[in-house]
Image 1 (tube, rainbow, N blue to C red):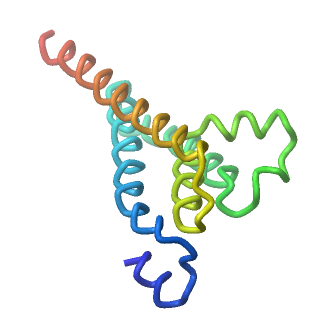
Image 2: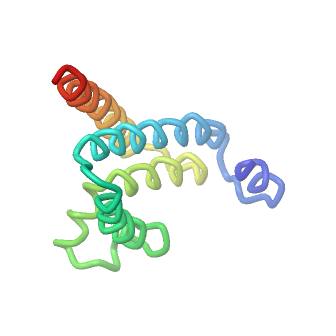
Length: 131
């Protein structure tokens, strides 16, 4: 839907933009895997409030609204380690046509995070179910 709207408004500057759809699926997979891992540590419904403690700053500082260069160098390093920054960098590069090695790093990061998340969540759930 969003990509179609961008196309209609003439905001897509690259044929690479069609890859934004599978990239969005990859971002969703990575976050779902991370969410599954975090869920295995939850003991009560109140623990889910702590998820917002991580999501809100990641949303605000992930270069969604401002370029990463406006942050101090130390914060830039922290931001670059977040999965949302990697997802935004990947999709932004695909839709604007600035595709390079950075997007390969983003894909590798998100794939690794997703695979690690699924593996860790499965191991933790298996242990809990066998108790």
